[in-house]
Image (cartoon, rainbow, N blue to C red; front, side, top):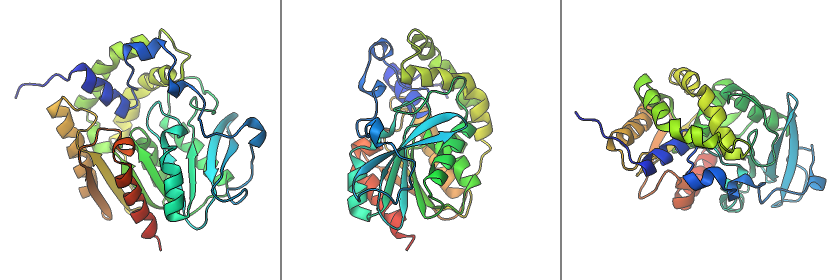
Length: 311
């Protein structure tokens, strides 16, 4: 079988999905919206170390959390009962979910938490290669300092699928379920696919190095530095059977334009669902990799369904 070579657009979408963040030529040197602070974040005077039980219902509160000497911005909309945590993909901060947060809170009454990973939004930069174990530690520390220890529905998009997998392994009793939205899943990362992605990413990484202080460029560079080792290990990771998971896979996949890689993405999602109990596969018809933007009603429905299953 002859190999299909992805076009530039499909390569960029693939890199975005896999945290080798999509950067057009102009985006590398120009300052875009994603380089600004999260638009729903509170002012510094509103920062708090209190638990999510404080504040008025329906209002977003900013909590600055310290973990190992760096601070992370957690944005909390207080509710009751369940807790929904939204984790965005590579290069995106908490503002990615700004349209979905009020709808989720209104529909479920739950506490809704978004956060900025290190180096994004209002969170501190952590120098060096990206480490998934550090990202997991940041999320764990943030939730525990906020007093969140149970009844969590974790919603993870794209690169955050890697964080979700290790978080679920470490904290199965904290999670009541997860919704993995076109997320990176272990079966995808064979040696062959890793090699292809590294080859695709070379020009993007070199372009990003021309403006390394911009948040998306910085994350692209740091992710590239650890990409091979991180994903070779991730290929062996296992989702705990105790935690139910809904996998929402986009119809177009991040590899739209490369049938071979698109099929591998779909096969990885199907394999993940088949490998354990209490897992469901949902296809977002007509959607690009940005399912929360293209099909927000579908994502909302699947999160509501997972939260309702707790009761």
